[in-house]
Image 1 (cartoon, rainbow, N blue to C red):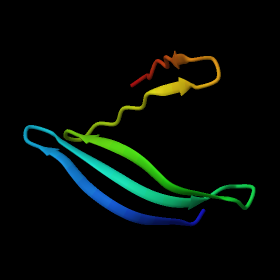
Image 2 (cartoon, rainbow, N blue to C red; image 1 turned 180 degrees about the vertical axis):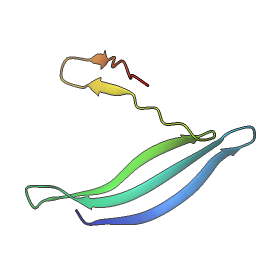
Image 3 (spheres, helix red, strand yellow; image 1 turned 90 degrees about the vertical axis):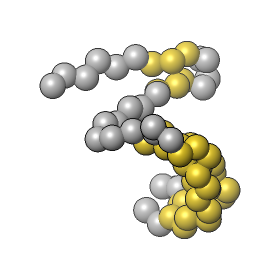
Image 4 (tube, rainbow, N blue to C red; image 1 turned 90 degrees about the horizontal axis):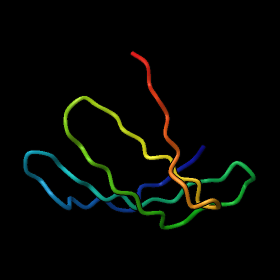
Length: 66
């Protein structure tokens, strides 16, 4: 999948860091998404994902095992 980073902006830098990334990327069907914006919360060696079903307006909860 091809992508292009358009910009990166640091929104907050303290105990943790929040960055905003703007990028373009190629869709699987050959189209392209342009100027997609995502915020990234950075705090140590951890990962978190918030899954949202936009059509049903619901948050999806997933249990992770160790």
